Image (cartoon, rainbow, N blue to C red; front, side, top):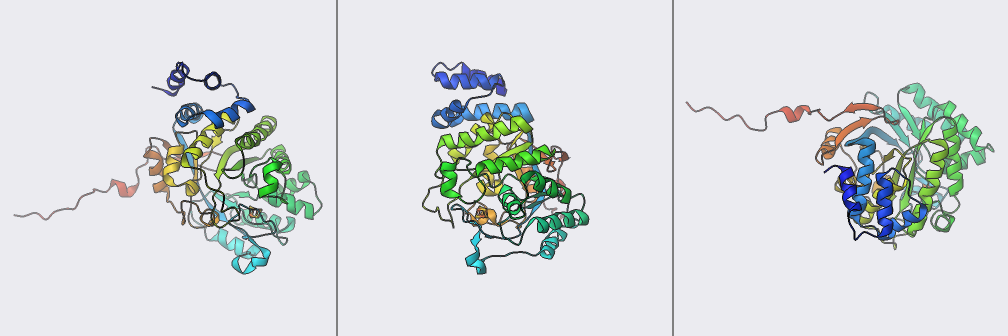
Amino acid sequence: MNTTEQVEKILANTSLSAELHTIAHKVLHKKRITFDEGVYLYENAELAYLGVLANHIREEKHGDKTYFNRNFHLEPTNLCVYDCKFCSYSRLIKQKEEGWALTLDEMLNVVKKYDGEPVTEVHIVGGVLPQYDVAFYSSLFSEIKKHRPELHVKALTPVEYHYIFKKDKIDYATGMRLMKEAGLESIPGGGAEIFHPEVREKIAKDKCTGQQWLDIHEEWHKLGMRSNATMLYGHIEEFWHRVDHMEKLRNLQDRTGGFQTFIPLKFRNQNNQMSNVPEVSVIEDLRNYAISRIYLDNFDHIKAYWAMISRETAQLSLNFGVDDIDGTLDDTTKIYSMAGAEEQNPAMSTKELVNLIKHVGRKPIERDTLYNVVTDYENVVFEEEKKPQYYKLPVVN
Ligand code: SF4
């Protein structure tokens, strides 16, 4: 049965509520669901129903293709002037001895460590510190591009940009233009958390507001550039806060078309100030991926970070709307492990990642940051798998 037939089977179910029937009908006919319908899905829809709808959209957009990329992380510092309650990564400046803050040369040395490696992207993200200002990041980006022009620089979030532009007394449009001129090529999705002030004030007050986050991405998109968006879910927010968050992203995407990927980020409760808040279940993770896929009809991609949710859940998520499971990683990121992620030492070779995708019947595609195909692994057999899997026995005469 193909995915259209699966949705039609749902529509033929007479015990379905009128609301779920309307939503399934809209999905089948590529119509957008409303805010209230988004909340209704969170409150009422079963996992199996959501999976059928989300997988239909996923396969309409991408078939079995499942994307990953080869990147490395550069984390300038884990010290931060802010104090987000959910953050397991930052150490306040007063706890300086537990942290690190790299110099420009040290950062460039991290980049040089990957010379000759087949990586396509450097992902730069960390805490906010006063010494890292517009001039500093401009030098960092331009030095990286000078050293390795083909390496895509994906860096920082509106949290850093708002802070450094304010310090330099420049507006967002000017600031983002300067960053682009220095070598910045795209913005990752971080710092979005939950946009609604009712939640944001409690978990991430002081840093940029939800509206400022959106404004910075809008300025970036106006320059013809691309970015991603995240949502930190499963803590003190209510379902309607999640829908409000996605509604704001969907509206901005209607205006600019600059977002590539939506990345739901699961709240983890280790080593932070919200350890009393229980984590949501894997079922809720899958429901959330699926509803994101259904709600964000104008986003091309939904991504799951395998290092954050575990390899098995990442495999499962490919049937719930996800078409991208991030990259091969070595141990260059500490963000996941410090937050209590499933993978404490996230490392997966290309071969492992390709096989992980193939094992659940999907087609692995290595992409670059902008989703150009680098390698289609559908028919690639790795060298060591070609070797015979038996021992040669001695011949007895
Ligand atoms: S989430 Fe980001 S801005 Fe907030 S404390 Fe952590 S590093 Fe700083």
